[in-house]
Length: 124
Image (cartoon, rainbow, N blue to C red; front, side):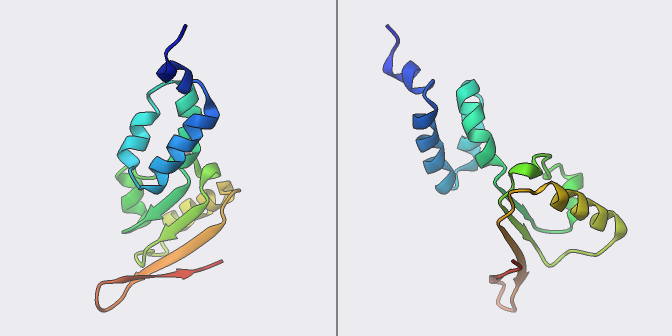
């Protein structure tokens, strides 16, 4: 007979409830750790890990620092800062990213105000 913890880890419905709570508590490091539990956790966690894409700074800097993932098909919310430079390389990367974002529901352009608070302007 298996333990309750072992049974829990094999039930996607229960794992999804746990992952949903962790995602909305914004604990991304724990979310990443949950990917390593087993294949059920990894299958449930993966869409949550790539659901949001926020780029602060230039797109080239973000790409060079390895902060762009390749799972653009899972992105539902994309957020860009004021630092978009319009360079051909950035424009090509943006076109590639958006062509892959089949689940995109919300797009924001974030621009700091004079008082250093950010305001999001929905682009959709």
